[in-house]
Every structure is written in C-alpha cells, then in structure tokens.
Image (cartoon, rainbow, N blue to C red; front, top):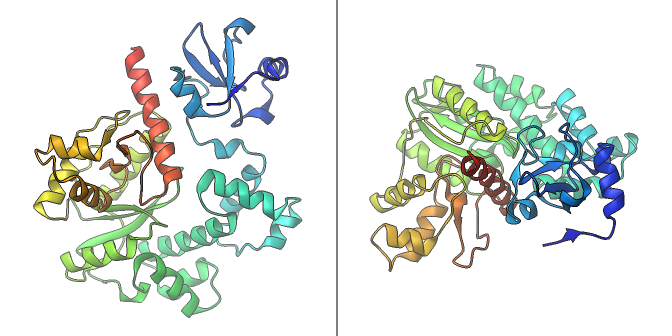
Length: 355
C-alpha cells in the first residue's frame, strides 16, 4: 500500500483548488467523515489534519474509508485521464471510423503513451477498442434487421471477408449463418468495462459475456446446440431489462439484479452457480469455502471449473471468488475487470454499513 506523504502540501493545495489534473490519480481520505473523494469533489474541503492521500481506490477502501456519494470516486477513472478522454470522445463521435496510429499523432498524442493508458484502464489498446466499437455498430445494424452488407459498411470494413472473419472471431460463426426465425436473440449491451453480448428469449437471460472473452465462441456454440441453431439478431424486453440493471449497477444506484436467468450446465455446475448468487455484493468467497457450502469439501477443483464455466457475467458473480489467500485468481473477463468489480461492490458494502 503506497501512502503519499512526500508532497502533502502540493496535494492539499490541489485539493483546495479542485485541480482536475489529479483526477483519477490521487484520492483524499478524510478521517473526520470516514469518506474518500476525488480531489475535484464539490463538497466542503476538510482540514489538513484530517487528510491522507492515496493513489488508488483500492488503497482507500483497504484503509477503511467509504466512497463519497457526490463525486463517486469508484466510477471508472478513465474518463478523467487526459490521454484517454479525448480519444473516447472522438471514438463516440465517429464509431464507424477506421482508426490508425497516424490519427492519434494528428491529435497531438503519443501512440506509446496512449497504448499504455488504454491497457491500464481497459485491458486493451485504443486501436483494439476502436475495432471492437466498429463491430458493435455492425452488430446493431443486424439486430435492427439490416442486411449483412449494410452492417459491413456501417462497421467500416472495406472487405466482406474481413467483416465476416472479424465477426466470426467473436462469436464463432459468420453473421450470414444466424437464424432469420430465432428462438434466442443476440445483441450487445454497453458497460463501463466494455461491451457485453446478451442472448435472451422473451422471458430469460441465457448468456451475458464480455465481447473480448476468449471462451465466448465456445459458449455460443453450446447455446446454439440448445437452440438447435435458432439464434438470431435482435432485442427483447429481457435485453432492455438487463441493460437497465447494469446501468444502475455501474452508477452505484443498485446492486440487485432481478432478470430471470436460464442456467445451462450440469446439475453440479448449476448448483455452483446458484451458490455464487448467494454471495452478497461486497462479499467474497474462496473455492474451498464454496465447496464446503455445497457439502462437497473434496470438490474444490470441480467447483473452480464450474465457476470458470459461468456464462452470465456480473449477474452470476464468479468475480467474487478469490484465492484461499485472498488474491485475485483467474477471471474470463480479465483480472483488471475483476478488480474493478470488487472495488465497486465494496463501495456498496461500505454504504450499507454506514446506514
């Protein structure tokens, strides 16, 4: 844990001036309130003797402070990064644009710095994110009933084969092979940690996975077997429901998911997933604890495999499972996402304890 002491005067001055250059880089923990804030927080500024500065949200939480409800320091920090912010805004302004490194240079930014910043915040480079965003635009076109050629053009792909290959890399099949009379409907939903693919029917959520998860094509094939090949593009009320619940979750407004789930797996695997659903937001378990709670203390490895096979990210909270020593362990969505989710959910726990 790194506590910043060497430049206290500069940091306190930045706090008084609400200096935005420190946003996302340094946080102030206030002993008199038990709250930690961004340095840009609009709340009344604390006395010097009540302030301690830390570099990360995790350090503030570990020190026993709860997040401020006004400046919301647990929300994604990327929007505060002066390297990241202009590129994200440019990407949203031109989601179908085919970005290259010269475009970054023309914006007055160093490609190496940009690459490191995006890797730190999102686990991927800006160019990877831009390509993913283009595919999302194509996916939306298909979900709205558009033709494959329309989706290809919207996504900014000059070559039909390149579009098919890029699409198939994500879901394991080309867009033209999807059903025109589907039983299950696939569309993407946004999140601060990256887009997710949601597959629903009229009453249940069958799959929710991050777009860049390596196991997604295999999971999709398995679901195609269940649906006898009848997965198509589109949204249902369930898609809209889970998107709204995810928005509230990431806003810090609600940690409750009420969307009905369809769990596809063996009896044991489904039992493990149901046990995961019992872990409250802000809580964690080890694989051995889960095995004991299931009455199968000898089945730690089987529990770990079942946890890793979870197909409904965030809602079935496999990210709440840690190593026996409390360390982060494997997570299909990436350890950086697991860390962000745990930090966010600790803020739910802190707020509940404060009431």
